[in-house]
Image (cartoon, rainbow, N blue to C red; front, side):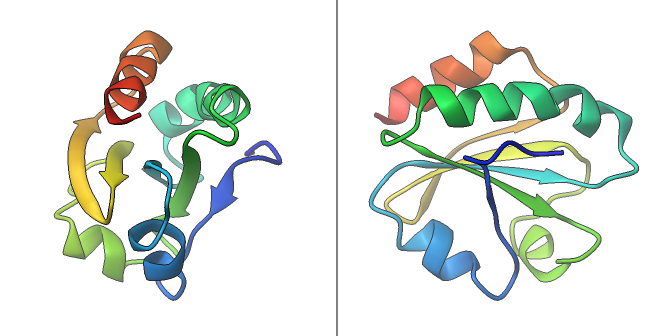
Length: 109
């Protein structure tokens, strides 16, 4: 479902992949059964290509990794959280347009 530049993150490697990243990180909390998650999947792939080397675009399956979504209060999916320097900078819930996600990432660059 995700392009080859999208990094799949789990509860076990969350700190290494997200919190310790030198780049801003967009994390997409999703599940395979979620229609809106599937709808924004291609947008996530495009962002990973467009921001390659500038920001890290990641996905976490909430069914397989329940600890991290719980830690960040994720109650609905898709939820997209932007991290910079290990801190949450912005959070969006729901399938939003690409322009909104591009603007969010650009603010963190």
